[in-house]
Image 1 (cartoon, rainbow, N blue to C red):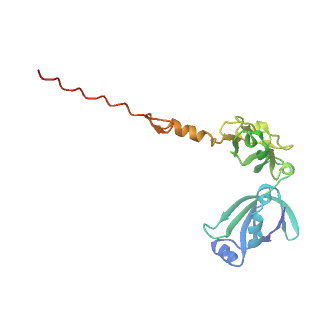
Image 2: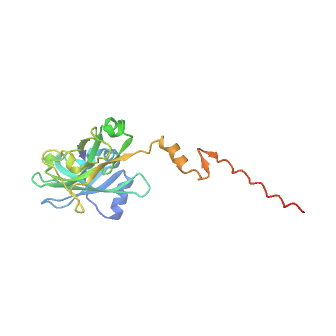
Image 3: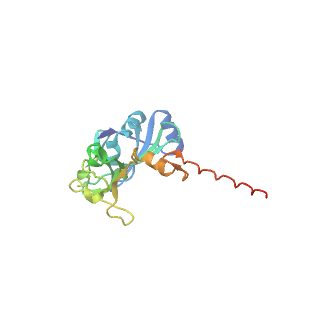
Length: 225
């Protein structure tokens, strides 16, 4: 994905504020052997680019003064309540250095799986993006995951999917095989009446009051002699 940036000559809080008033967003490019490079971008073009998944998860082509360089989006500072990008950071990409990136997981096919289609379950997407290590040329825009084989009682783990060539997953917390998708059983509507019956008071059977015990007639007083 390609975007256009411009040289930024002034820095500081006041200069950045004046720049935003003119519809530009201040930014910086760092990394590699070169010094950090101050840039500015058209705010409207940047706002629309940020809505695209590829702008966050792929190597970008940045054009400045007719020259292109490879960069990654590393940080975006947003206004607390306005639709305004305050600042943006990019990192230069070295073709021979592996990248540590978050790549989105695109799930599909769960509605056709036995678990969802016939076994009364739903697929809970526990993890929606994956930390990966790879060379820039191997970085995928997303990782497709097919859920059409999900079954009741079985979850999908990291080891169950095939990663693109040259891509390795980075796990955290000592768990080398985290759950990506869990299969959750939906309570059956047919079980509700049975549950209501079980919760009925002990003195009622089948939802009807139990028959009252016949009253024992009082003993007659003994006849006087």
